[in-house]
Length: 221
Image (tube, rainbow, N blue to C red):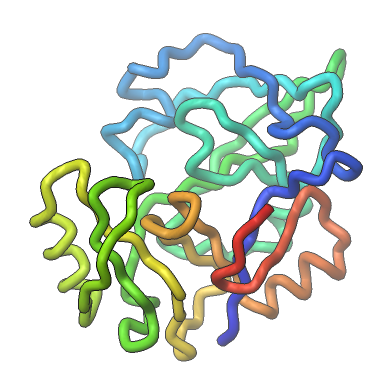
């Protein structure tokens, strides 16, 4: 199966202000164990009813099917409309969906969802074709290393002393992968979302807004 990378659009003609969300309000504490973005549950499954803020759309932003946000605890996932949620349908076991509200002036939109990553799996990577770098830090240069499989990846990463890290370059996904939606970290930009060509076609046909598709390793913008 072929895949593309999914990005939030930064085209001002389509979305207005980037990011589209100006701020978040509500009765929540970002340090609380029940907050949706608590670091204890970073890339892990949440088994409770989390507190989510109400998002405030910037007055210069447009409401789209994929909404850009930089608020703490939410930037690692996707804010999607009910329309987009219905197209994606089967999100698999590596994601969770939670309702979230968006305030647009005097209008409160209750038909949006926060799609968060509950697990990262490296079993989808074609390790023979993908390039891996060991780097001094997240933004620094690195040298190429050999990683043979997902277990090897996890072992090598755990043996690194912070701030050293691993970067994935020239990502290749196994053609036998069946999932329509994938997420990986340690890629360009930190976390990347990848969708199958079939799902991409459905999203395009439905004319969903706020979305950009690129080749697997193409940078955007």
